[in-house]
Each structure stands twice: as structure tokens, then as C-alpha cells.
Length: 160
Image (spheres, rainbow, N blue to C red):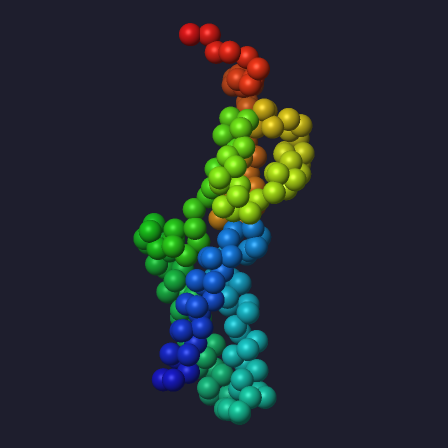
């Protein structure tokens, strides 16, 4: 039972730490995937070379981790609020051609990374970005104006 409690504690602790680090540090992995990848070698190594040479203890540890990951995944799928706590929410970093500096600072997103993603999306100017969204997996989605949209330029005044 001690192994189960230790694994559960470490699992929850690592998820909290990864959420505090932010989206950009996680890049392409979900927090649960990263936690599982970090913990499995440690749990198995404990049974192979640690003080406890019991493979039973290693199997219990990995099984506990798998149950925790499955349970977290089921809760995230079932309850929106749990998903926001574990995975976070997308952040709007550009709104109609204007960078949202508070969001970019909070997410530690440099303008250079935003410009790189704009180029990948085939957009040359910030004014041509309808929305820039930092997704929960760390990717930046760039949505440009479509043919039906007319971007409002900063130097133009809206006619009322």
C-alpha cells in the first residue's frame, strides 16, 4: 500500500509542477503523457536496481500509475473543469492584429515565436492575423482573415 501512496503523491506533484511551468515547456505532449514517460523508468528501475529488488513492487507501481493516468483521463473527458485544471485553457495571444502583451507575458511567449508561426501559416504581417491562440499543448494556432473578412488596419479609422 505504501508504494501505491508514493506513486499517487509523485504523480499529483508532477502534474502540479508541469501546470505551473506553463504550456510552452510541454510543447507536443499532454501533462499526463509526460508524467507517465518520466515515471515508468523510475518505477521499474526501483524493482531492478533499487533497495527493493521485488518485481512485484515494480509491477504494483506501474499498475498504480496506469490506473491514475486512466482515471485522470476519464475525469478530464467527463468534467470540463477537471480538464481545465489538468490541461489548462487555450490563451488568446493575438486579437485582430493586436498582440495581447499580458497573455504573452503570462505564457512567456516571445514575439519571435509568434512571428515564426505566422510565417509557417503564410502570414507576413501581424495585422493580417485575426487570432493567435496558444493551445494547451503548447502549439500556436494562427488564424488569418478569410476572403470574406476585411481586416481593420490600425492606420484606418472606422466609418460609423
